[in-house]
Image 1: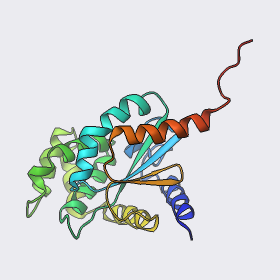
Image 2 (image 1 turned 90 degrees about the horizontal axis):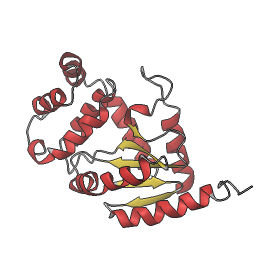
Image 3 (image 1 turned 90 degrees about the vertical axis):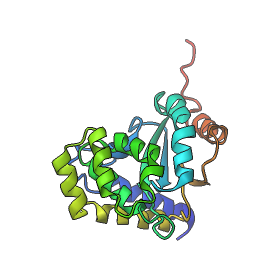
Length: 210
C-alpha cells in the first residue's frame, strides 16, 4: 500500500473510531475547528517532544487565529509518543485522552506542552499530571481513576500504530490533504500550503454578481 493510501486509511480509521461516549462525532474532543472545514490537518505529535512544543507555543496560535477560527481548517490531534527517546510521552498521551473523555482535551493539551520542562524528566509524572488536570478543570476522581487503570492505553497505541503505518517517523508530522509535512515548520510554510489548498478546493464557489 502506498503512502497516500495509508494516509487515507489513517483518516478513515480515525473518522470511524467508536465514539466512546462522545455525541455523534468521535473526533470532536481532540479536534479544533468546524467539522465541515474544507481542509483537515492531522497533527501526529508527542507531548514530550520539544519540537512539538515549539509548534504548539509559537506556530499554532497563528494558525488557529487565521485558519481554524475562520472556518478554513480543522485540526485533529493524533498521538505518536516516541517512547524510546521520551519516556514520559506515552503517559502524557494517556492523560490527554483521559481528559478527552471529559471534553477537556485541549485545556490539558495546552498545559502539558506549556509545562513540559517540569514533568519531562520525572521518574513518575502521574502526580504532576493530576495537578495539571485540576488546573484544566477535570473531575479529579474520574481523572485519577483513568490514569491509574491506564484506561486510554489502547487508544494511544492505536493512534501510534496508525501514524506509523501512514509513514510518520518523527514528530511533529502533519498530514494535510494527501501530503506529509514534517517538523515544526514556521507559520509561513503552513500558510503557503494551506492557502494553496484552500484556493484549489474553493475555486468557483464565490458568488457571481447578478
